[in-house]
Image (cartoon, rainbow, N blue to C red; front, side, top):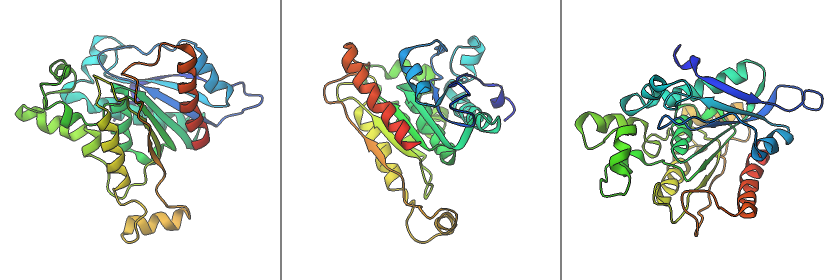
Length: 273
């Protein structure tokens, strides 16, 4: 949609001398609660750029980077605009010549995990890999349970599936419920935490099972036959789940443990690209 193309992206790239574009890239997004994802410099982003990757942040609707109306345009029944904005940003990065079409990674955390899952369901072919930490992936299931600690508050952001109109809206973007049959998904690393009171660890496992059992690479069917002709390696890519048995929703306070955790995440991205 034309409105989707208005979503902005902040980009940091390596020096052109050793790494001329187009480059492999990591696209990060959140897009919820009116939160702003600042495009500031930090050690983790510098590590991405120093590895020869372009780092981009998509300021999609649902976030607050462009004011209150930007948030309103990506919440409740309008939530799908968040995901179409991500697709528009990804395609623009490739079309601009900055990013290699076969080497784009997508990352999100918490509500950004919803962004990752829903975007993959819309355009799995756009990405080589995806990373989702403490991800919110079973929106339709979790938001039905008002007994969970934060569910009533989440209805204002994502919609209430217990309402007649809200049920269809939430079910329409819930990642677990919209995995595309036979589609070849990118390599995925899902990182839930056992003691997470905000997003249940089981959501990542349900999404992984849905992708692994979607029939991609199974003999038979026009889609599978076409894919085999186009790509000799048509087997499904790995969908990995690593559950933190001791952690909660937030990253470790200990800087060394935080660095080890981030190193594992970035290693997955670099190896997948």
